[in-house]
Image (cartoon, rainbow, N blue to C red; front, side):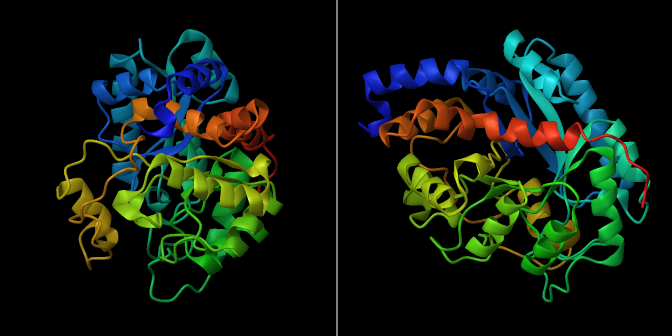
Length: 346
């Protein structure tokens, strides 16, 4: 029996989990009724539901249309999220809030004004780049990270202006540091693991994590097995180890969940192959599309999320701390960024 399966501990965790606001900083599943039911079973209050990877303007619009249909067809389980008030409403209603997210700014192409257009359509969180170069800067797999571009500076300030949270999860190190320094609002690293614990390119350095937190940003701790020291042999306890490392580095007010569930996408399969190739079709960037990748034992599906709460309790973490880590920190950041008044462009 795993530690998180102890009946008394699970009972305490269930009670705490039931009253907490649980926000998942990013997941990108093959969205379906089954996934939505799992989110309810897992007590997920709201999620940054990211889908866009390499899409252009048309693909970004298609994604918004697809979410509009899914929200309408599953209105008993889901609630659209535009504001933090919507997340609180989802909690009261027993539904899961869906905040549309992107893992690339590729759908705005070279049209700065489209940041506001997509914000109006419900896209609340945008990752600046995905793995390689775009108009704004470099991804972490780009051959040369030359930093935030001039256009990227404008994109970041436009995100600030209209209330879009800037995400740096797959962004290159120099571009990330530049974006943190340039942004007038805190940013996030929505789904990440610390490189200090496992030195792989996808993980972030302590220096970058600290820079994000120093400006008020949130670091979402990911369940991605290749980023954990134990890989596919990891358990929920290894996940908590990674979270503990980041808390020790930046403090408990700047850390949250960033589960990075990609459930029910075939591996290998069209989506994973699309994700792993530059721009979706060119050079192969990673072997993740074909490699065996398992979530940590004890937290392999979304309905297992209460096991994270139990693992935190086992560590002796206080309930007030756990409530912040499960979602309170995210909601504070979202209130600040999404609630920002519309200022003059410039």
